[in-house]
Length: 383
Picture 1 (spheres, rainbow, N blue to C red):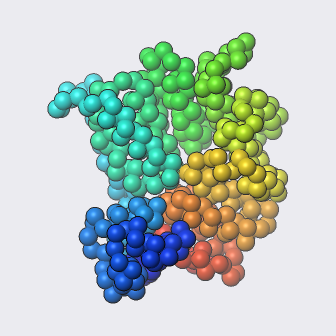
Picture 2: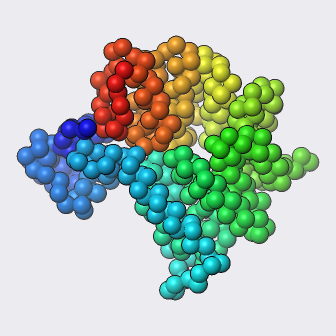
């Protein structure tokens, strides 16, 4: 299915990162000749440690480089790793005694921070490899750390459309957060549950969960702290998107305006509100308005404040709006931009793969770069 040599992939991503062969070699601790031979296929990348170093320097998942070396395609590799997460979630702490000493809380917190950074770069297959041990160890750490692990698990699984398992993780996280007596921790658990309920088609339940949780974080008669207001805004965005999926424009507008008022003008939370306006317009079927808002967002200063994963996911989610607006070239352009930011958003995430197949299927002369992405992802480009 895929026949692009790994060396050509290394060259492609090196160029994408703006590095010459010499710069790349220096940062890797290799010679320029070594890099040249790898890229020409004269020398193989047969050591796992070297492959990981190359992938880390290129800021891509190793799976992206391995996609066409006879290995399963990225979607299949992610599916295989989901099984390990499923097994970890079935090892409920109340049913089996913990094995070995309790993890050091500080080290465990550092592991969570690393996993959060991996998620923030959209490296979902790599994160799936980290989650099972984090889930196993989280049963004996402070509640806020347990909530963070369940949150990451739910968010990753909902990305991969494993909704039943994401629901379990989100529910576990909310159960832990309820006993933590911290409204911000509770909000951090409620927001992923809202996403999962939306993904499951339970839009009314998602709306109610988000609204109730938002008012618990910041009651109507209380302004709240900065952290509480940010958490409340995130929940209001979930409620607004659920309302959009129920085709309720007045409620969408009201909630988005409320979230806007909860955020600082130059902060990432305000940019997240603007991104949600785009998603809501697309969900309401107004492709042209969504595209116009998207282009205003990406041209403004707030776009760069959003995490890399958020930007890539937004680009994938706005692609159908371009299709609705009759602009297949624009749809392909945003998918390529998403692939440059976080390849797994397009190559692994089902929504990205579907958007890619849809654009290729509707385009008579697709961009060769888009065809290359489809080939690497194992997406059928037949039209």
